[in-house]
Length: 347
Image (cartoon, rainbow, N blue to C red; front, side):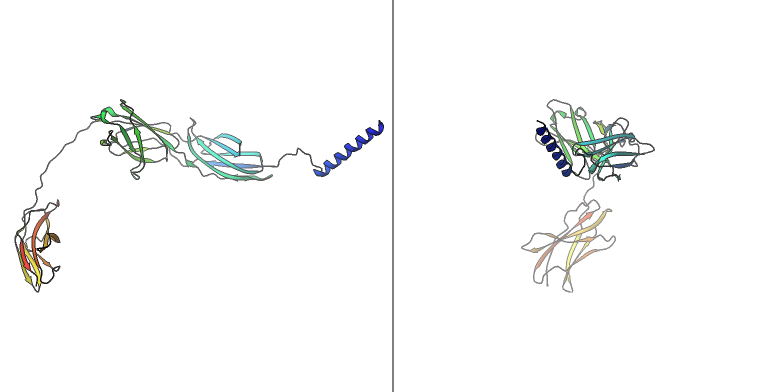
């Protein structure tokens, strides 16, 4: 019995010696090496934004919030591990330090929020934590995307019962940036929630269509300021106005008279009397090759007040017969009736 105990004791001692050799004398449950990271945050140079519309706009904005960022949430993530701290900005700046962070690559996420916990700016970067070292992080912050909450009351426009769809043009610089909203049957209010808008001032407009795709109404362009991370509420109404229509008749000028044609040094020369209209700017000379062509504009000639008007046609070909007439043009681009027609054989 005593011999058996001695044998078991010797075996245990030998096993312990083997295990000690395999682990180099270290404790099996040793701790991971750690480092630290310091994140410095400066508030972007932002103003206290309020959504201000032009006086003539038919949009009535009611943008929530608008306060400057006051608090910072900083997250340190690696896989599913998340370390987080929230601090207040002091004079537009703050600093966060994470200590005893396990060595490895980490992602830093910075969220700037206002007193109502609305997100205003955000940014992220990667940082390498090394043993017994203090890493420094620099995060570029960008304005958070905003949202437009649009309410359209259809009762202000005539024949609004025909409206089946609303199309919102979000940006006058990009007419393809459209959002289509279907009207609920019988509803007089159309509601739309447009998200992921970059913070800036947009020029927006709406068009209303019926079931056949025919245009029922088109609005004017109106300015709308989208705030970082906020919901900008806009009530689009259709306040009535007035229009004064002035009708002014602008008759075409009187036609040129006494058109003649002659040859000068083997060139065809046209002359005619000037028109008497005060707003005259010039003439159009029409030509056709007889008998094959129809009349086409051969030239446009400027008006020479107080002088006989003339034109030398260098586009003719020898042996062909040509006919001409002339019309007068005024400042409104009105064209007179034809002058008399003349014909000549080109030499």
